[in-house]
Length: 434
Image 1: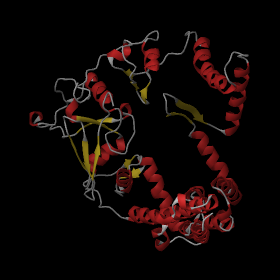
Image 2: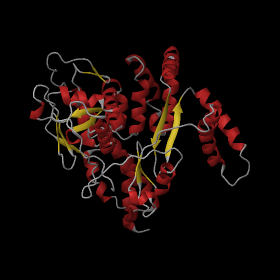
Image 3: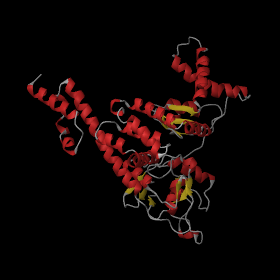
Image 4: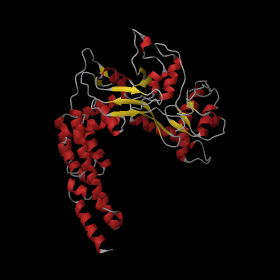
């Protein structure tokens, strides 16, 4: 080991014990892995992680300030609930943070709420984050888990954990906070559980390589029973070459689809699955992807399995050869025809707000240029080029908020949103073939 490596290792080890600062952050470029020993690289990794916490504390402070900013009051006569956001408050920080950081709206809302809670209720935890003593995941756990408690009770939970958190991993902190919250408010814990029981639901999330995660949020004791039933059913397959995990996944499908359909006398449960596929892929001349509605691109073999299944119904949709955008001409009407609705939903697939992934089939169809009820011939036509899917929240935002504006390019389909701050954000519909 060279003298320079020993010296750099010693410097990094010292830096690891110090709280991050602007001065120490400026020196991070000197942490070249090739100049460090294996031990020094571990110390350097810890140094970088401490500075990430320091930067995240700064982001928390910025988000708290953005969230605290009071927007302009709404026009007279506008009020009501905007999917959980009271219009009278006109708090549109979520939308702009989501656009600026390229986040989903729910993620932006979570970050803003975490920042508000840390700044207002947990200054000690925020200080630990700023000093690089804990990770953002730990700070977020404290904020989120203690949000259900009164301010003084939340403070007592933080006080009980503050000395332990710097020595804990994120999972250990989460378990410790949960225990303290239960001890601090057992009656509240039971009430929250009953509320969650009422909110039970199914979940389905796309994963890579044509796969998806399917499951349910339900009481833990029921999940344990379901797990045992699936396990027993999977064991019943015998030794057929599949792994136990494969059998478990197949058992869940068989129990839900095959067995349910057979018991109902249907010979298999019926379902509606929409796939968009180029003709050459359908004919087996090309192995490019198709598009599964609500999921995204899937392999050619999956496309053909769905398309040629018994009872499949085919609909023809045309695309522009140059751009790949879905195109079709519909008659001008005030209310969109069913055919026009299908066209816009298939074209855009999701809400046209940049950060939103609400499926278009669950959205309103909004006139980009407002329909003129007095003189329809003046414009604002009910044609696909002037229609876009917007979830209820973003439809009301576009219609009622004085600071948000949108324009749509009829050729590319790009929607350009202008925020109250003057920043612009672009949303482009999916293009076939990309």
